[in-house]
Length: 356
Image 1: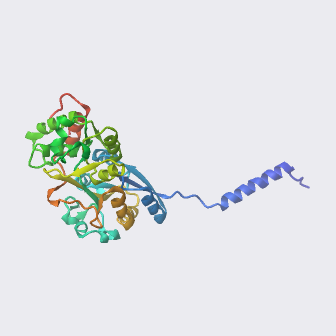
Image 2 (image 1 turned 180 degrees about the vertical axis):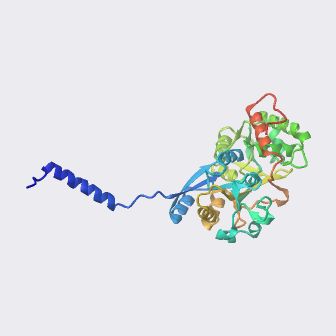
Image 3 (image 1 turned 180 degrees about the horizontal axis):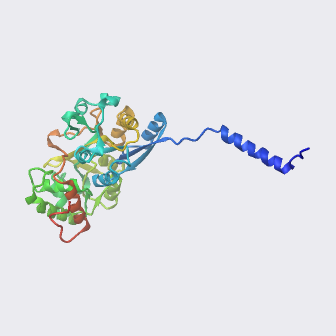
């Protein structure tokens, strides 16, 4: 007759059996699908993101950027594989189309495009969105890039971008840390025919103008919140508002007595759009994100929280349309970036040409 196993072994076997039963009966843990979004500050508030996550049962990973140069670095390094959808202005979109990072998007798959104002539904009429009959982005938000000034420092509002170079305000000026925008600003200050196409013969003048700007400003900011804190703490007189009405709203909410003007030379303006990368893991989910950002809640948040205009109604739309200069692709964005880095670093002699 076989002897029974010792009690300790029987208990161990019983314990192991329970563990196996529990393990076999437990449903496998499946990680939620991840949507990777590259966006500007204010474009993806937590509650807006959480609503999307709950609706689609996914996770959203938001990466915020503070300049077009940084956006290019993040997308170009992986040729778009590291993100699924990104917010980009119409002028910058061109290099993402050129490199294949941005892929065509179908309006029919994004129902809320039907809520947009007619001028934003007609993608072919918007410069830079359509190539070879295919649309590469969906309009989202826009703003002018005017001058913000301290009302207590000016008897009359400054009405020219020349104020950024005024030595009377040296160390009391804020400008944006962006290569393309700053070269366009310098070209405008020089009175060149096109701020987006600087002729070779005038490039040296533009460089010198930006060196003079670097010497006159307190610093160059990247994020809107950074500019607000600097404006408050450093008693800034004038700021070039890259984020436009978004900064106006933030400064006023902070209780700072500021004014906002569109310079007489004309005011730059950007139109930011959502585009899908060729590395998108789930294109349908990326399209759903764009659709979500055009719904009533997200569109209203742009106006109420950020002070920005949306593309579904006219609330917050900029005035003085005849003075607006919409951003366009520049003559050589890579060269502008390389030259700007030299200018910003304070190099004594900035080369007219940079390696391509």
